[in-house]
Length: 395
Image (cartoon, rainbow, N blue to C red; front, side, top):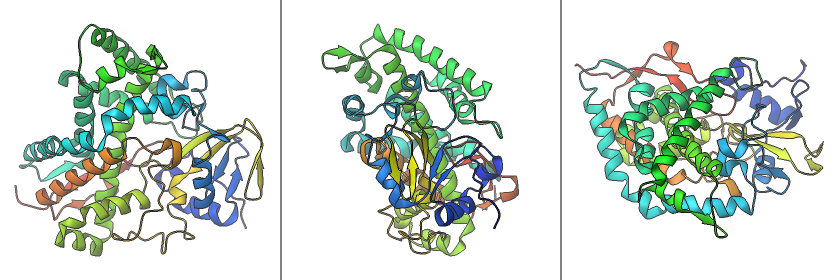
């Protein structure tokens, strides 16, 4: 048997990580990278236990496995680089913008965005599903919630795209991502200074006025919140939409079922989250010596929790490598679990449902150019940077 390898920095792994996940689950469910020193955790039960145990698996260095964020993680990852109790206090502040009522009130706006965007594409025979549609809607939604001027929104999308890109084989953050981070920080620094001079009733105003134990949030904490909302609020749904359209096309019988009964779109969303999670992995720091399975993890080591692998674990999901809309997905970990369960999960699901409903009305006979599709280059997220689509109707 050849030596087991798992390299999240390899483009080949980023393209299709699932064969590597299967080998890890069956041969080495807790595996130490000899080159990079992190521990990959692959089975559902172990990943779930780690997600629920912030006392041993800390977020204090952020959620990506690359080096370079250790000293200023909160300014980039916000609450995703905090542990309780500070995390819980900060999360409670921002969660005011994501109550079920507030999220539900966004549906007409999201649908109007989707309909308007697709109407602008009505004469096209071929589009890029990502750049022309999937990337546009969630960015507009989160920017609207924050009050970001429309003229600035495309720049924010460019910054966000650059920040998630990774160079092949490198465990460091590429210079382009560092520069994009600095540019986005500069933008938000100026924007926050201007916002402080105004009375705002949007989500940004809530963040600026927020206090923890009588103290206002620091500028780093405010900017960190804005970073998180723009990155997670746009990238997650964009990748979910691209993966959903791709896998429905790959499974014609599933496609026929959804087109025949559009009320099953929410099930399509849930199975996509399980089968090809937008977030494939999150990093943690081991706070004290601990044991996972048969492996001892020393304090100070880094762990990579493979959400994408956990969601394909046959110990939990029958025929886990089949895309099967309508299955029980309640055990999936695509949105995390425990303290760091995704704050925007309900918004992402709403955006995905609405955008996919409108997409099927627009182009039910769409066809993909799979050979021209390009995956994102990232160690943590899985989606498409380009997804060419023929809309399947006369112009």
